[in-house]
Length: 168
Image (tube, rainbow, N blue to C red; front, side, top):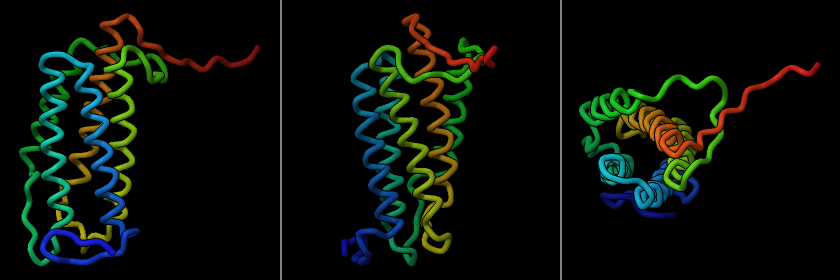
């Protein structure tokens, strides 16, 4: 058993604890990505780390005391960052392979962890999900991280795209 905010006790393998662990890992990977990014991109990654702390607090709060620290404005902010990040990044002509410079590679890793965190939050029963915006937030974040990774790889000239070729 482990304790959540407000004194609630849950099993260590509860869906809430699983989701909290994924969000914690995501914050750690974002820290690595931020070390290798510059300027506004690094600032965005650090800002998102703060949002993830709020999201964790939302998920760890017992349902009888719900309050939302990450709200609709947080999701809208990610949407606006995504629109801005997409400028100058053309659509991919195949599957983008993770890689490029370290910042891009860590953004790709963070994207994969964000998607896993989204799946873990989705596994929390709706009656226990303290923040209904957790899933949209993590979804938009994974999209933003994908575009940031592509932009960093393109700037370095090291974006790789896999295109399936039919044999013979």
